Image (cartoon, rainbow, N blue to C red):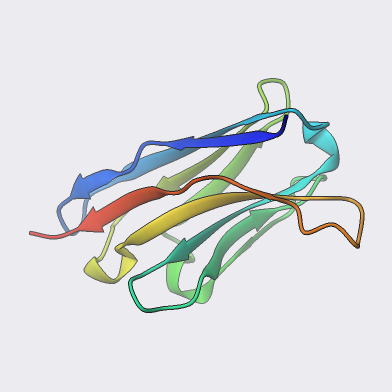
Length: 118
C-alpha cells in the first residue's frame, strides 16, 4: 500500500522558518519525481517546488530563494525547508510522488497545515 505521510507544519511568525518532511512508503522511491504543492482556502492547489529523479529542482517564483526542496533516496523522504516565511505562505502543504508512468496520476499525502501569522 502506498502512503505519503507529511509532518512539520504549524504556526510560525512572519520571517520564521519551518521544515516539512514527507515519508513515502510502498513505491520505488528513486524512480519518482517528487514535489510539494500548497492550497490556500478558496484557492487552487499550486506547485511550490519539485525535484526530479536526477535531483534537478524547480521552484515557484514566489518561493525562490526562500524554500529548498530535497530528497533522500536512502530513507525515502522528501523535505521542504522554508525560511523567511510570509503570511501569504499560509496554506495546506501536500507532497506528491509523480509516477514514471505517464498515464498514472501519482500519489498524494494527506497534507499538513502551515500558518504564518503574528
